[in-house]
Length: 334
DNA sequence: GGCCCTTTGAGG
DNA sequence: CCTCAAAGGGCC
Image (cartoon, rainbow, N blue to C red):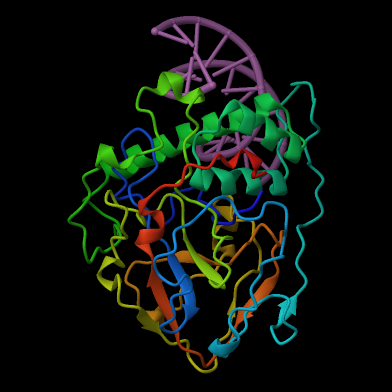
């Protein structure tokens, strides 16, 4: 596996009411996905033009954790001694599901299992049979459990979106959009998804939310919350679109250190706040997301890190990276 | 296999 | 009680 990206979502609609613009068509992959990377000011971690290739070196954890550019002056690598690091570990599990548990009663998956499935779901709503099997194996779950989980998750997603659409417009700060002109879903934007749901098994969705791991120079990744309107129909961000292509300067206060991780388990409402949210003074209207160290999973469980203070960072957007969905079969991912 | 609805049971 | 996640079952 490889790919960090996202944590999740709120079991309960976040108060930030992020579901507003999600008039998602029946399935997700949204258009040209855009991602935001936190990187040293003004730097294009990817040397623009580089398009994401295949899955990152699968199974080479940490191997390519960059030392994030020597010249950048900041080395955010978790392996860098200079980078404050704290121990991180999932809380001891007591509820780890046993693979062949007979269905007597309802078992609860472990946080780790949930995390990994959520993570996967974040970028890939449909798994091919092979992928299901692989994931099941790697998680110690049964094929059926994984399949069921994804199905339930899609249903939940759908429900949330529906609710969000309904109350859309009324109360709640539906992501005080700076640019909410595009809320119309564009079917054409869903490359990997077969609208004829029936045969989807043969065409595993190409994950639009490709791994971040392949971009070694992007030390941190800003991951949107799953049910937030981070991705609008055009694949942009309703609140950050205006910042596209012009690196937005973000200046953490001199004294501020941001904890990236207190807890990675952002599965549900409970742990939702465990991620890191922008401090208000960063002033990204309505934008709340979670900051993840790049290659989250490669270093899984991810290290707790701190963002060096007194630095200037840019919120970069590299839409080109996703414009051309890759076709690699990520079956080897997990 | 997916969708959809329902049931079950754990946790609040 | 209620909510919600895991699973069952029917249908396509």
